[in-house]
Image (cartoon, rainbow, N blue to C red; front, side):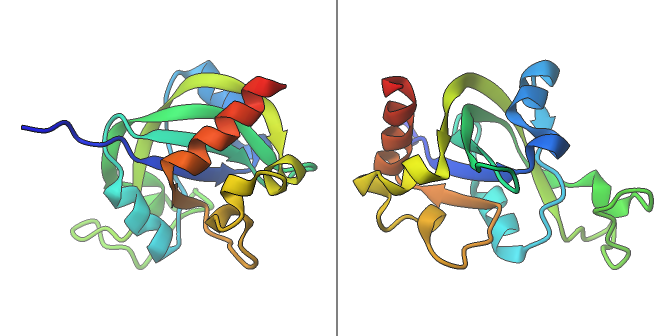
Length: 156
């Protein structure tokens, strides 16, 4: 029986809302609020042990702040049923939830790698991360893309 290959992902969030430092403080967290079907489907593909680049978006400058790992697979995102949540979806039926989350935990903080630095990496030339119009908050990376970002962070 062969071992499963670890997959690599990038997850974007606003650091004021839930940044890498929040994940470190909590020890783990549900990646809630995804309301795009393609991003939700990527969440459903994640498996325990997959690695995640944690990207800070909607900040200046945006960039990668840390590495996390998936510790809980996709399950219904409870915020879709909470009327007090900004992610409430009144059309989502508890018997057939529309939206999922995964649970992640921190692995290590990285030296912050800005978007400008990411654009310099040849391994990211065709990455979704740098594609015009890509607004997805969750998407897969190749191992080469993931490793290039981690090496850039480690290189200082």
